[in-house]
Length: 203
Image (cartoon, rainbow, N blue to C red; front, side, top):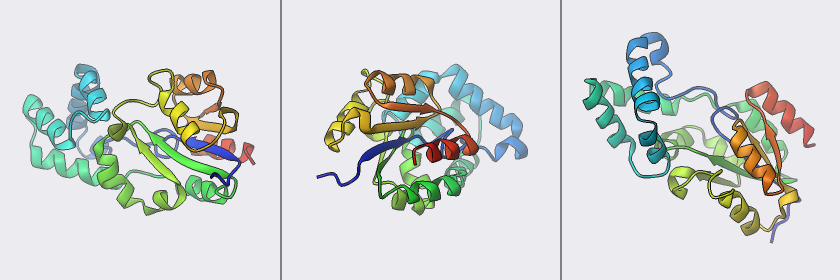
């Protein structure tokens, strides 16, 4: 039985965090960073989508990347894991969300990889304290905006809310459109300042 009057879905990258994988290479080794981004996001975007949907582990992805681009696995892996631990999760946003827990059931919904569960969440224990539930596409096997918002429709129903009681904060226009189309309240924003302002508008 639900005891809160509203349900809020919060995205990760672009909303709660703003850096990307291997972000430390941008200054220390920009050539390698460029090779990685080109390989994953220009040459093999489907590989990344499959990774986000649970078809590959981080080890498999980094191994394939290093073999195809002739990079040192140990080096690339070490930076990858450390950067996953050191992602810039916004403490002001988490603090604001914590203040809202009396009214809102908070769900963190992210299109992400296994590395999120393995290193990012453990390195940021406040996330588990603030959110009532954390959903990752890697575990779901599909993206939250797919199948006409099946994830949102199912979750809203499972938690005992109506769609007009549900809100989402996401930087993806596609996700926000899907959420609005099913009857939810969507705020498409990015960056700490905009997100904090959006949270204030709920109160």
